[in-house]
Length: 147
Image (cartoon, rainbow, N blue to C red; front, side, top):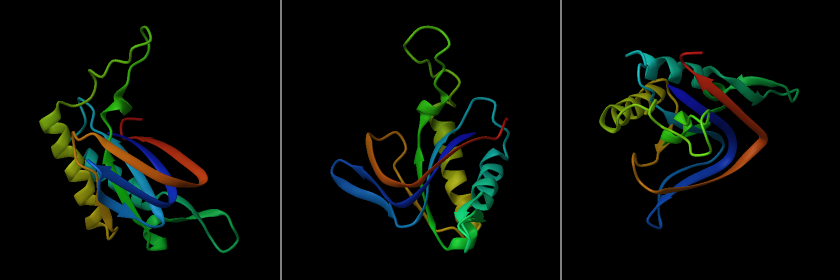
């Protein structure tokens, strides 16, 4: 699985004009299930996200994890993280997991993060979503369970 993690002061996802997920301080996690992901990839990635020390401590250093801050996660499916741009200018997405299995992995990731005590809001798999956020820092981290 791949994820792009952004530390935010607030974020929301809207579908057809309605806010369907919203958080205050925490993380926006854009998630893509990849063909060949191990069955435990959602849990593995959730553990990494929950423990990623990218929040400021009392001295202003990135030394605290989401689990330490009481923050929340907005988890949004993002198959375009599988983009392959090695040939030409049109990205290919053949390495993304098929939609049905991809949705199951996405939901498993959100559930695993919630099981770790993180409040989780989500987008809607396969929907045309508008995501708005205020990136704090900015801090943006790329994670890949296969890396």
